[in-house]
Image 1 (spheres, rainbow, N blue to C red):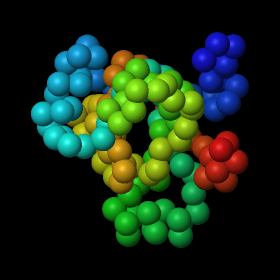
Image 2 (cartoon, one colour; image 1 turned 180 degrees about the vertical axis):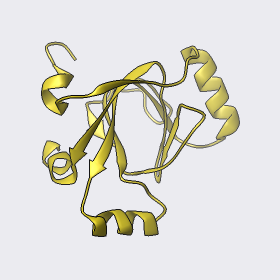
Image 3 (cartoon, rainbow, N blue to C red; image 1 turned 90 degrees about the horizontal axis):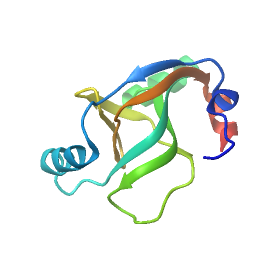
Length: 129
């Protein structure tokens, strides 16, 4: 996103490494491991650890979810569309496996390369969108 400073939006963060494979290989592996599942491969992403009230964390846990979301600023591939996406936040994470498969209730995100990781209050995340 030209002229867009992720750091200004999310504040202090650290780099986080994810899958170290090429795009074509990531698509092939994902289709084999998760047949029929809608998935997205972000180009720019931020792992958000949510600072949420205990009650919210407990409610998420009761639904099998964790207080973690992604902010996606650009996608390189989306199995369910051919149009490029605007930036968005995911729903809460259900699981993270193999250092690259970030699963939510509705979609699978395949994290490749380097992203950023930060903590943010739930109320701040809600105000972003």
